[in-house]
Length: 64
Length: 380
Image 1 (cartoon, each protein chain N blue to C red):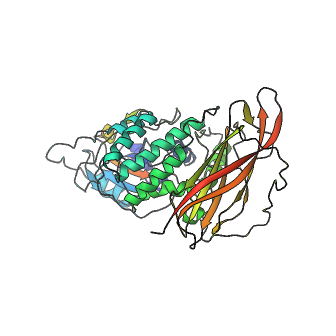
Image 2: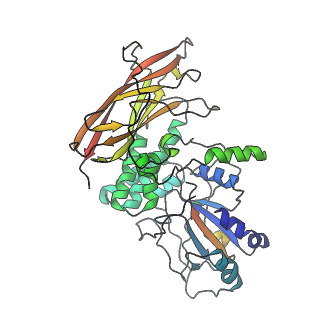
Image 3: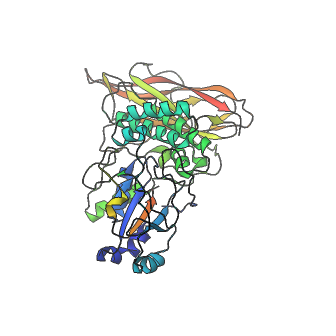
């Protein structure tokens, strides 16, 4: 895992706009990585809205 | 990630905090191996298409109980202190609606890669420099390629998808040069000279550690190989100790039908004065199999003037011992001298491939010709 310069993109046509502090965080759906099943792109979808009511730390990363 | 896992352990245990991972990889199962190795059991969402629209990772966001962003680069101290101790007030106004998927995304997320490619291509006909759609197009081509290559028989369908993925990602970088999510996909498959780090060199260590713990080792859908494991270099090293042509006397029987060959270039197009990765993808056609018991396939290439490779003879990448090799890959790192004229150039050569005939069981070594056109453009 390597540190990388943090750069937020401008909004693209079909992607989220980077939110500002004090704004709602985007809640689009993503495939869920299920630990008991093979990981496929056609997995069950979920979003951060599923954690509403809890404080969430969202960590975006890759294993490379 | 391990630092966040360790520092938030008590808060997660108490139920005061949920840590959610959002991963940015083409092959999310590799990330699952990483997480198992690190004993990280967060809920994980997969953002292979970069729908979150970020330009680099890692990123950490602190989101309160109402779904409002409270910090974009929090420290563990701030999270465990201010963030958890504050009863954040609910904001005025309506919550944001989640972004709906466009057609190409929807097809991709449901595993319909051909339809996703068609939708993305249609969109790009009207908006050719939409970087996020170009990136998606590359992801869909690569996903279809992976889905196809893991099947045991070779139909010839979708062989060009790997190159199409490289082409689309290359265009995405041209449209959005500062996006490091896009750039990493090319670096993953591109030349060692352009790599910031080896990418998946940790996998062997992770598997060893899991085995020693007696834990299950997740099986990877696509094993990383070659460029995905190679150590970066900073100079194009021409030193080579054993680079003798393997069949200089034409002693091996030529067979152009038994093996399907597909050449892939990354990045594409290639620029004068730069390096590129050349892949020869070898698959057995119907009626034969790659011989898993014999030595690995080997290739020999002849380069146009001004092109250099660390070696002209290369063996195929190793395959996992538990797997029947349905495809073998031979990779070259090639440098294009600054004096090379822009235009079309051709790399030719041959591969020596051990095969077995399905009907008779007879195994033999065959010689298969290789040829790949390289389009070289002037430097930017």
